[in-house]
Length: 224
Image (spheres, one colour):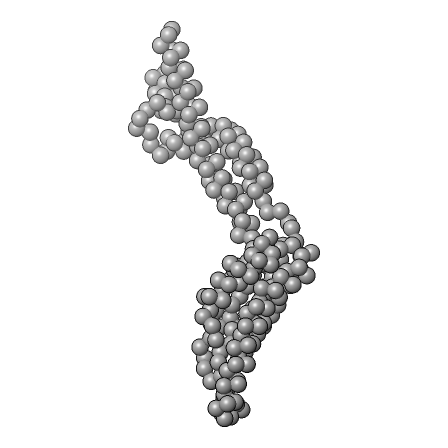
């Protein structure tokens, strides 16, 4: 009888013991697995709902990109105009004067300035005209500079056929590509982190419930 009693005590859960071993923790989770799965599934449902609400809405957004090549004077490789100043003009002056509703992003790569606008697919023609208008002042100004330089060369009796040079030009106008928003991955992060947190909270919940259950049991025994 004493042997059976001691064996029964060793098999019982004692979550009130401060020196619980890993084996006892695993044993508690196994015995109370119904509690664990109930809490875990409830939390997963909440996380899944939040991730679903944060999912990307499929809208026909496109990225329209124009590549502006900035030329150099004949026989030189240095751009005819300082590239950051051209970038500033396009982004802060010409784009806002022509259509402040369209946001413009710019990037400098070598002698090329990339101009990008994110918009709906049905606005393709508007974006094309918009990019034409914001690059036209640059093209016209550089065209005049090249003409003046050529006149000076002519007056100096230089052989233009032996002097190479590239004029400012648009390499591609409003080239469209599919736009993938970086926010599209937010719901995946929410889901993955949420599942991990749900697992941890389910484990904690099991031990909290077990603690309350055993505490009530101890209090009821002491009150007898």
